[in-house]
Image 1: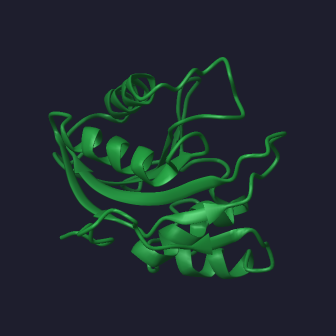
Image 2: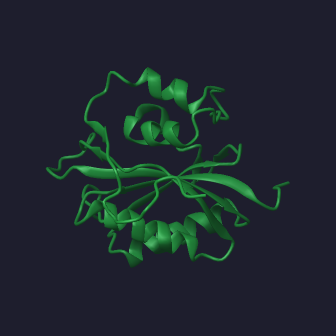
Length: 175
């Protein structure tokens, strides 16, 4: 049985247009969803594309929310935000915004429509660096390792650089 409110981590990415503005727009829209409360947002990270045939670098961040939505309801809301902001899922490489459900409490979900924790978390420094900034002690529910430990394991990867938010007055870790 799910508790009424769950701590959830969302990966945000963009490689078309103004990446930071796109991420902040997605974050703001996520906060407008009934049953979702925004907690904190990591710094943005400039990221070299991994495994994609694209010339455009990404802007990535990780956000922490609290939600009363079920995992599939939250996923539906996230996909709607992507569409509202111009994401075309038939194009897989370039996107104005990409939202990934990384962790939903300590749940382990493996269905046709949703896998949580996100199956690629442990291979992606562009997810682990902002996640370790935000929640270094958060435990992966399958591996039992912290975000910090998983991130350190990938530090040999390159192409991930912490940035500051360009928007005037935007605080990285809002309370």
